[in-house]
Length: 154
Image (tube, rainbow, N blue to C red; front, side, top):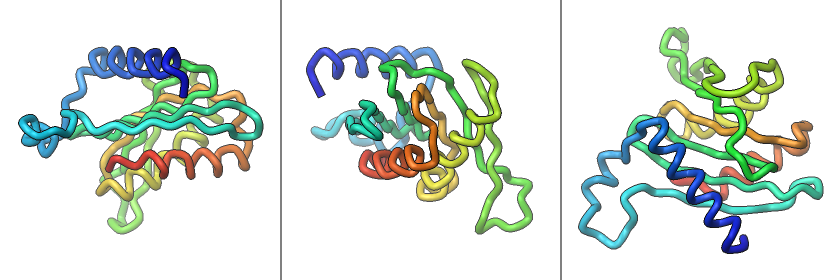
């Protein structure tokens, strides 16, 4: 990723963190004296169906924050949370809520498909997902899941 884009992604991430008042995880706060950064974050860029796609995954104590963009912007911000009222604990149901952006059915479908496995692998923690997609086809969503897995911080 070029330096200009990396700088834009970092500024975008910092603005979002301060706007949402997210806190670093407890284990990250204990590492303040070590060489690791306070907030664990990974980012990558990959071409999916010929469209440059950027992913940034950041771990906080109360959320996993993922930005998935094909526009270089956060886009629609969606909260994906496991539903504690589900009868079967091993396979929780998930609730999606658009916090900022356009309320569309496709947004909820994409968010659930992209964030469910993250939440489950992170001990059923909620996921905050920023989506700005040009291509939301089934093939693209599958490829995006693989890119998210490559940025695993949970």
